[in-house]
Length: 403
Image (cartoon, rainbow, N blue to C red; front, side, top):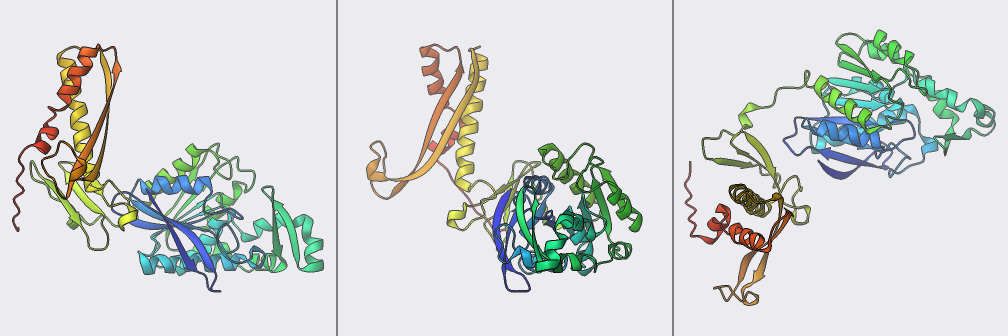
């Protein structure tokens, strides 16, 4: 997947930092991810969930709420309402530059915020929560020991996950201003609730309350032995895969008009005008090519010259495999490394051209097996008989027509 660093402003003009994870294939839909309370967009679970969704063609925006991670602002000045406002700012960014999110996903209190914000996001058709409280006030218990300080000074510092955070009285006051069950009852969007029965931060009873308040279509998935932060990769990747499969029911079918029709023996490629990204099909195989970021591409796939080098490398390796099998050589595997560069003709002692630049492919072979020096020498000769090698050295005609 490709990770793009993005920035956008909240309603107060502060810059929020995000990462847009893009799939290697055509984007089928965009999702917005809201991280857990005091976490950041770089939480391991968020990264893994995005990776799994990317595998299903879903792009994911994850960002730091105000005052957290790399986003501007003071966390002490934030509230549950400001978190909702940040989510809507992220939606506006996606809608302006890409497409409004069809999927909303929130972890812990981020899920509660997503549920509250969903009604204001008409493009969203599927909403999912992971280990989320049924009421925003659930987090108020974290400050039970700091109430005297809050009443005295209006602010209190508490330790959350081993880190100190300062919050104001307005944060607690705002939590009680939201009627989440009423909001969920009027949601009118598909809802998936995921929760671990052994979650010791947000008890699983919260999932039951959310499920009871929701109208159909609604679903519940037990996360078995996962912990609240989904610290095991297998748990967060599972969440992403389940979410992708569930959401696919509510997403529009891919536009078959953009499918590339391939006749026998053809390779078909298509590039849209907004990027270098090129989808191409070889038989039944759908692949993506791109240019590196250094020349304005998105680095979503190999460049055309990378593909040419890959053709030489794979053809060489297959040719040597066929020869070794035919001669019953004790060769277990062959590794071929190919690099491409353009060099000045005057620096090439064995080239016919004397001016300009020439294309130079450097090919390095390594063998794993019990081979004699004579067998190794012969394999080096056979490498030059690879069909792609011979094509590159032979006369080539490219004939172009307009269809």
